[in-house]
Length: 408
Image: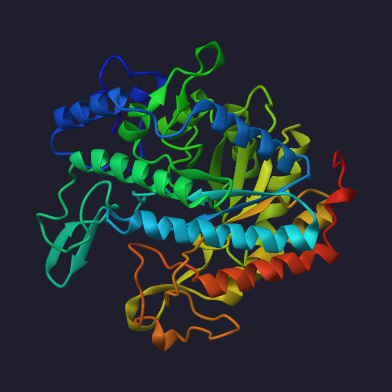
């Protein structure tokens, strides 16, 4: 589908006529227009100076002078307790950042997957249980998780609920005084992102003020698509997920589209290869992007390439495989003399039982059902997340940012 019929004329721009993957089958395009118009008139959720501040900090990461820790829920849910849970996650991120800073004496930029991560791309448009086939659950921004025909209808009014919930989450995190935690999410639902885009930047550059940083996902990174075009036009720092199918030419082309002016801190490349492929697939990408002259931030997402079917049919991830992909990511960068810039994790401050393993009080595969609370994919619990970041901190002995070219 394209966004031409969804975007009201006053916010329609270059991305609206391009093919947009992973968009819901909205039954009433006029209703989407009305919601997008309401979002256009609503107060922004973040401001331009904070987006620019994050880009400056990411520029330090690209130079090898800092490290990026990005993490949070796989998919947020519309729930009155969501702001409280987001505060818990933000506190966990700060705790993890402190571990890294103490080990490396290196600043850590903390970015949450929060206040906007309400939609998920899906591998199938439908879900079947027995003889019944219904539209797939696409996240609370689109439809409901209950397996009923009524719940699975794509309802654009949910986008306004997401806006209000995101505002409440950001306010709760600020009140908690957790520290500098920026907000990020996947820019998946383009009517929502476009509705919160404002021409507030220097020289009239539009900023997506739904969050400080947004990313283009593995399933929506087509060069001729609406998502890449949208990301290329906004002033925010942007990221793109790179799975094992991406070629080096495509990676370089994505960087060229997103950052033709080579603005420091502008582009983050999030590699999600899987533990068994990271050492084989990543080196060529890093080498080719470096040869292009682009100073990007390289980040490891060790979650999405390591998802398996666990006991009882639940999706899970083994902590050992997550750790193995992180180690492989660092090994590749160490061998190439480049900066392993960060990690991107799905985690929660709660003691859920969604990922198998861990050292202290490990989660057994048979215990996944005890507290499996994710709306979509499995997350590290607080204990597992801290253990993982302790392992990452232990890599400091063989990974020396101060020895990298351009490091301070």
